[in-house]
Structures are given as structure tokens and as C-alpha cells.
Length: 119
Image (cartoon, rainbow, N blue to C red; front, side, top):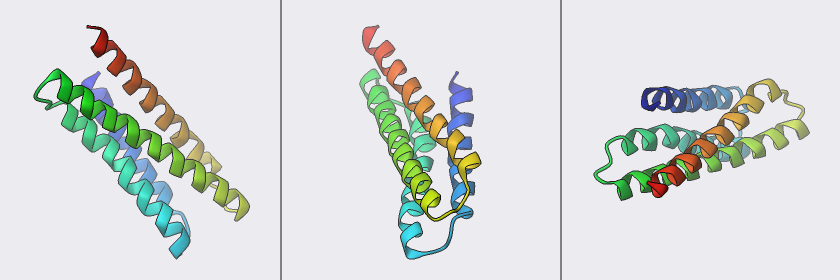
């Protein structure tokens, strides 16, 4: 599971970056693009860090960061989805699976945290 999540969170960051590279280069888009790139890459970075946790409490803390960053990624993906629809930029095929992936990562982190706390 560990290696699968490391690969999955890395792919999520790369796919978000690829999406962002297709968006217009304006001040307005750049504000959201920069945020999405930061939080989506933080998902993978913090998941990797969780694998080197010093204690159970540290592990849970780092998984909570992953959860928060994945949820933040979801927010910026939704913003970009709504904005691009109004701007008549069709990125639905790229953005829909990313929104789903951010939801799934959040759900996995929540379930993992709950399981660890019940041990």
C-alpha cells in the first residue's frame, strides 16, 4: 500500500502540473495555478514524509497534512473547473479525474487516520 500511495500521490502532482500547463498565462489564472501546484505537490511530499514518522502521533499528524493538502487541491481544481467553463476553455476531461483523485486521497487518509487511532 505504501508504494502504491507514493506513486499515486506523485502522479497526482504531475497530472495537476500538466493541467496547469494548459491554462492561460494570466495574472488571474496564475494565482490559482500556483496554489494548485503547491498543494498538489505537497500531497505527495507529505505522504513520503509520513513514511519516516518518528512516532504514531507524528505519523497521524503528517497524514492529516496530506488530507488537508488534498482537500485544498480539490478546492482549487473546482475553482479552475468553474472558471474555465465560464471562459469557454474545455478541460473537463482532464480536471474531472483529478477532482475524483483528490476526493479518493482524502478518503484514504481519513480512513487510515481512523484505523490508526482505533488500534
